[in-house]
Image (cartoon, rainbow, N blue to C red; front, side):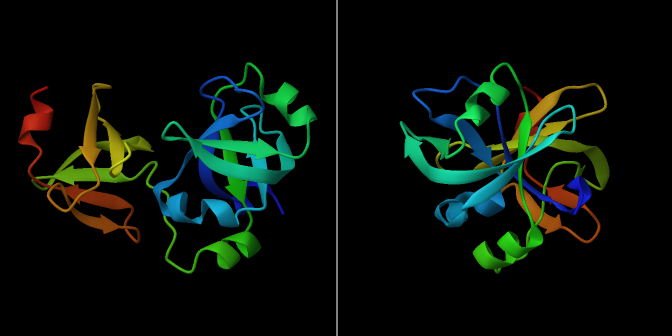
Length: 170
């Protein structure tokens, strides 16, 4: 199995570890399955991969945190940014029977024109928010709610959005 065989479910390393708790961001598809994840692959920016056993995942002050069994992991992630968290296909089938999709890289279409690409996402406590970057490197935040998201087409790798004129003027 190689890195390309793994499914990215989130990332860590964007803020400091607090008393052994590592802050994480889970892909929107995996928000509800957090307590079913027993092990992860951590993919570092140098493409090295580390297999870790999950001790616990929980919310602390409305943010998601992870603890792992292997103590050396905490030293490895210090000073690192954008460490990807991944699972294998067997784990995916165990924890999630819904269709999985990763929004990163999806083309965003507004009024039949390409607006940009999804470059990140996060959950604001109420719903997921897509970060769209246009060709001028401007970021636009679009909540994943019916008022703004018309279609998520995983087959053609695009999102169709509506009612976002006000977002474009910010």
